[in-house]
Length: 300
Image 1: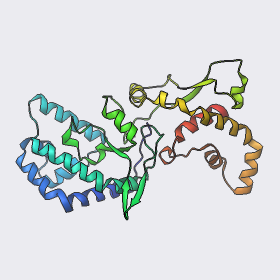
Image 2: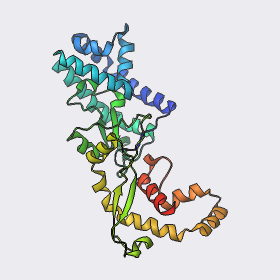
Image 3: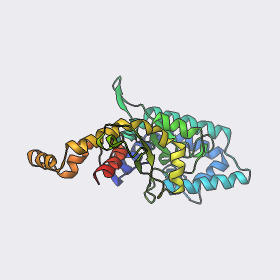
Image 4: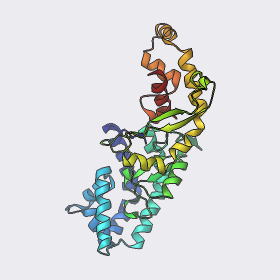
């Protein structure tokens, strides 16, 4: 998983888009729903005095706060305290409206073009009939079937590709939240050479190798991500990409790169990124993390 960086400016813009949508079209009804549902009101208020302030805080819960809210919901259910079916239906319906009308604006502000779960698939924003549309999925980090109370919390909605969203919706796993900066993924791809007599591998002429994941530094959450999104199997098809990187590492040697630096005014880091297909922000280029891992393996 690639962590999703959000600056304070992006955060302000995202929350402004969300709150404008809520305030203009849904706030009055949502407040009425809360007034009729004592359990949901208890969850939203969380000891605060002002309902509107409490609601805004609840809807903008960050990843740590979402985890706390999940625990509160679990504790409420242990006491046989559930929100009303009307509330659940309303929240799920509001999510669908948000997905169709606001998700594209949020993804655009985030400048997110690649799935953070797999780094393989694009998250497409397109203009259709004059309107910006989002053709990816929104994953409920805490799924809306189990936790409908969190169905419209902004930071519970993760822009992802349809493949990863389907895989995650079909299974349960304890993985790190993509907005969680305190935890960094240790997933690193490598090649494993099976036949030591096949020297063509080192020249990019043979596919007699496997693409694997280095296991020595993996956390339990990393292992769950690998299993959940089937990363090792999904990346096996990229042997040709590895061959291209090996060949490029030979073609663009230090002398040639020095010449390009001088001719075009690029730094060595910029040239590497252009030549080998990665960026500092892996969420702006498909397979950026994989390509960088391969460059580190074959170029040191």
